[in-house]
Length: 75
Image 1 (cartoon, rainbow, N blue to C red):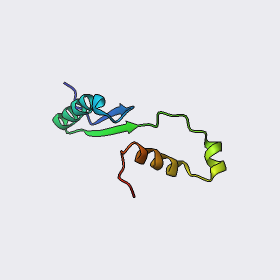
Image 2 (cartoon, rainbow, N blue to C red):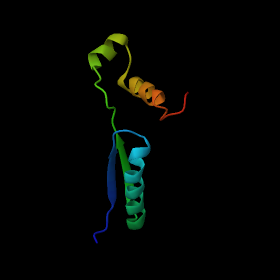
Image 3 (tube, one colour):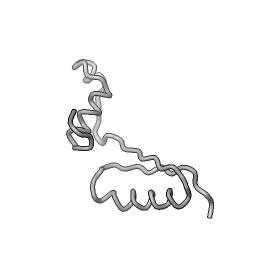
Image 4 (cartoon, rainbow, N blue to C red):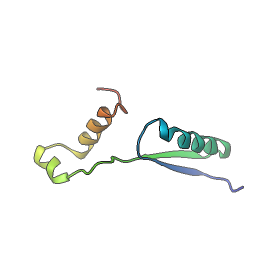
């Protein structure tokens, strides 16, 4: 079996349905001494012009969305 150095897993939703895939990726990474990268993207359309008009940075918008999904603790 080839030795893996990096494993990338993409998660659309951070809910219980995605946990088996994440757990398996973590098992494989641990068994091979690999690093595990988790990719999570916003699943909604973001109109950057609208954010500019509101004077909201893309980073601030992302943090607002993550707080709304309870992925990040409130500041």
